[in-house]
Length: 411
Image (tube, rainbow, N blue to C red; front, side, top):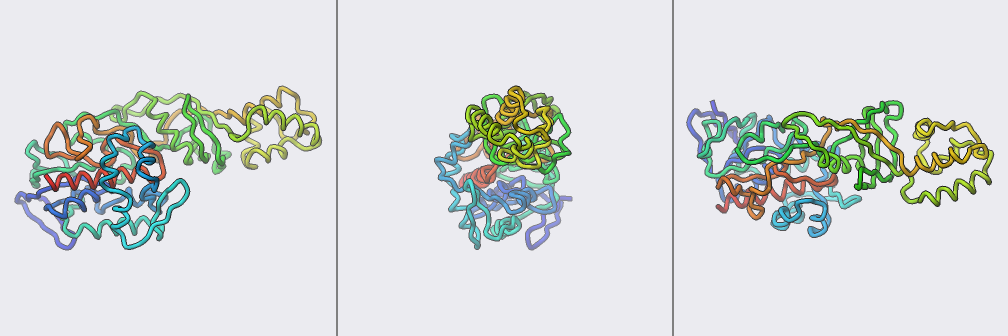
């Protein structure tokens, strides 16, 4: 039996139900597509979970980093596929997004935007309130779409919008199976914005934060904080660097987990050059010769990291500066400027986004409509679109969702 519960009513019927537009996926992109399309069309929103917006509730640590408030021209520079995103970003701006809510927003560092209530649930409620003209079917998992747009043999639509998300956070409904709903070409699917797993067990220093450091992988350098966890490294700097690492490695999650074996380095003193460190060490080791090394390093490192740092350097901390030889001094400087970690995996359970998806070469960026299947549209993370952490990915979801919904309704 096909069950189609409306927001205020429930419909149970074995007969075919017909709509202008069917939207598959009740995340940020799907909800926004439904809001835009329902202004002029009969819309049904199909969600496999018992509620909408599960992943939205998890964003920003539950505070919902709803977007990034940089000017659009500057914002686009943070995306590899900026030309594809340009039309959607200008079609649905941050001002358009804010106007949907009856509360204000606050902007924090790096132009990250949060609701003034600091509750993701308030954002979700505000969006759902705009779906009063949309039929919503919960616990509805789409298994099959026919060529004439019949879904699961019980729903017929003139147009379909796929907004099923990626593969991250499977508890939110994301699944590799979503990519098989159509015959559209799919790029390699990879982890994005993911913590990194280290070969070495770091549980002894779990919780340590390396503040405002520069992390390097090959030619890529990212500045930010690094947080040590029980299984590896996380924090904004690592999360953003993980995108570069993931894209550089050849793998596809649809075929299996990646084989990771690489090294990253951390500049623990990015504002001090090697030459300046050498001058400081030379002067201080003479002037403060009776100071113990472990105490002196507090000038450069967080206290809880010093013991581990010295262990990695192979130097004892209970030695006075005057007794540190030249070889040890050079080793200390080298590790301050290039402290390495061996990486052997992604913590995929905590990856925030998916890299890869529906090939953009087969999607019209002005409408989000497939160029292969007329009447089929895509929005959000199911597309081969992603950005750094900081509200960029929700910006993609809302803007592409709105454009897909508007375009499908106009057609």
